[in-house]
Length: 394
Image (cartoon, rainbow, N blue to C red; front, side):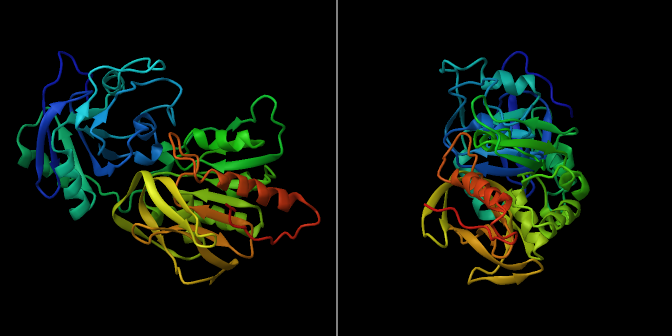
């Protein structure tokens, strides 16, 4: 059922999981019904950035922080032009907004964008259930009161495994983000938008990059015809096993020895380009508190994450690929998941997390500097075109 903007206050709402578990609460935002994969986010801040992150397309997000909406909503912090989560679950929505930048309340924004949400006291029990059982399909409804009938619709809904979603969230036309006033242009970057967050080209532009953002369906010829100093592959939603076209494009970029940097979905695309496998995580990594270790420096970054798939790569040393040697550069200290890849014989690297990190943390912002260093080395006539991607130094 199509969501409708709330009128007349909150009404009873129900959340039903595909395994039959049901939670009852009250509506928050739009009223109606929504279905998607339910996941949890452990961030204590950044709810507006979470809502507008295209990587959450077709997902119902549970916030584990107890109070959500305290600082309201503004028009400066969104990571895209709309809310992408298909449903939202909170424990205690703020009754008022308290921030000088707030322009409206979170509930008003959810209703304005027709996002169905539910407030319920059992978010801790729900999170523990998802942690133990894994991410699964679910529905939130204010119109269906019978959990069993709602569950039937959940079981008939599509799974995230096998979902090809990048084109659904990508820009349809190229656009350019230029360095701010006073910052000279040093490099030209072609960014493939698989679900890019607005802060990413901004972080590059701050470092003197003129960033041309291209649709997810951009061909290798279209990218390389721009004669970029480097190519960036963004984050995005869906199953990397379906992303055959971006994988083929990335292989062409690698063949051209053009410096390459990927984050999140871009890391998974690089894994596939190197003929590695990918797999779905049980409940994924979503939040701003994931400890990731650089295998060379042993430094630990506290990082921002949003992914439900990961790369299957050997972590015990360099391995051979069609583009020379490569290695795992970073690992997650919570569960050992591969968090970064680096080619040793080509100028290419990637990380699974989000170094642009709005609303934080900013431990990993140095990866943008490392990308600029790769481009600088590649444009220096005295450097080797096969220069490897050096790890970012602490």
